[in-house]
Image (cartoon, rainbow, N blue to C red; front, side, top):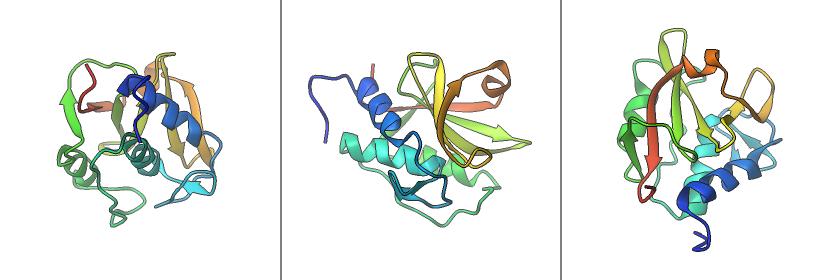
Length: 142
């Protein structure tokens, strides 16, 4: 549940940091045991007490705009045009948007990253920034 002493953005960032080091597991939803990129975002929503989805009906590489459509429909998220700490970044690999990451105040991203096998944090380099398709913010963050 929300900590009234912290802003929503700070709570999102703190919740994402709780996930760092968790092994990558497709459809994973348990911090410390296994998470995928959506699992990190779902954990953040749960910490906020936000209404969110729990679908596991997506493939390892979502296609056809499936991930973007699912994020657009989330009642706890709004689409924004400016990137701020605590935002959820929808990213493309190749041509399809099929990955999400949490943006932090340190200009880093936290995400379940299959290639490294864990939830990790690293700099939002130019290569990663170029992958951003859309930015989402948990409602109530100004």
